[in-house]
Amino acid sequence: MNRTAKRAAAALGILLGLAVLALLGYVGYLQGQYYRIPDKTELEVTGPRTELLATGTPYTAVSCNLGFGAYGPDYSFFMDTGEMDDGTPTRGVHGRAESREAVLTNMGTALDTLTALDPDLLLLQEVDENAHRSFRVNQRQMTGEAFPGHSQVWGENFHSTFLFYPFTDPHGDAKAGLQTLSRYRVDRAVRRSYPIDESFFLKFTDLDRCFTLSYLPVEGTHRQLVVVHSHMSAYDEGGTVRARQLELLRQVLTEEYQKGNYVIVGGDFNHALYGTAHAFESRQTFPGWVQTLDDTDLPEHFAFVAADNGFTVPTCRGADIPYTPGVNYTTVVDGFLVSDNVTARAENIDSQFAFSDHNPVLLTFSLAA
Image (cartoon, rainbow, N blue to C red):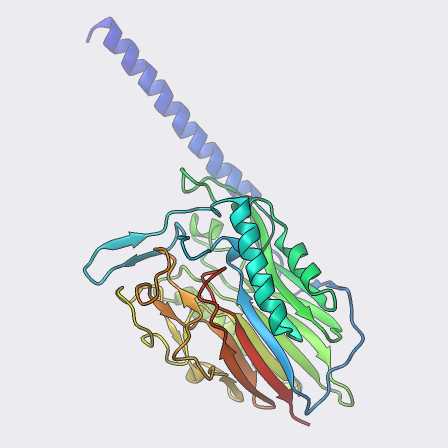
């Protein structure tokens, strides 16, 4: 080997060594910054209301995953994968929203849709407070300002340092959570920590999964309405983590019901609900991430509220490709379940996935005397 070749080999070795050191330093940085919020953390109720719920009175609740303001119909997300019927593999492209303008447009459309529904209770998932992926648009503030007559409960479920992946469009750092808004008095709120996949790399991307419990007193009774706001894991092929999460949720629901309370659970379950796994036309194969949930998975005294149009309007689209009706895999993963002392019906709102990869779900309910 001549002198020039030796110098080139030495330079290459130095560069590779520096790259390894940089990678190890970055991994150490991620590990050093990683933490989970303690289970059973008490949450602040901001903008408290005084009005009380009553038995026998109809109320409305809406659940909606905002998709951090990124998911217009043309958007695809890097963690979503799939396969077309002809065997062609598919994978999403983007790590963050396409632009700040896109986030503001999607959030504006979402808030127009939600304010028109005028819900008494509003459960919002994937709400960014300060995140690279959504160009620092404070969606928590935007949604609160859109519903000035509602109190707010914030359950943080995503707090990450800078995730430098995908390399061409990094997801970045994020602070995001579950936002619950109520037109009626909330006495207290608690954050419960879901089990997650704590393998070394997945724990940095699976969020600090949780559900929140908001306790609303009911006039003339010693009971409370417990509003459980949940967002279960998504990227969990085989469903082992989600099974552990469901077990915790079952336990909490049973405890609250045994206290004599009314219970409503709403949010993004990341399971195909009440038999909708194969309900909709698609030109994609059945995704590996899809697990199912129905009433047989729930504790005694609880049932899902199948939407009246639950087999004609999906609530979630695959985000491995841009949205085309009849092409993407779609199903129902969003909605509500209730205890048997709550009478309820539901409707999936057909927003055509205009502002998110999810459609909202509207619940109309009343509490038994």
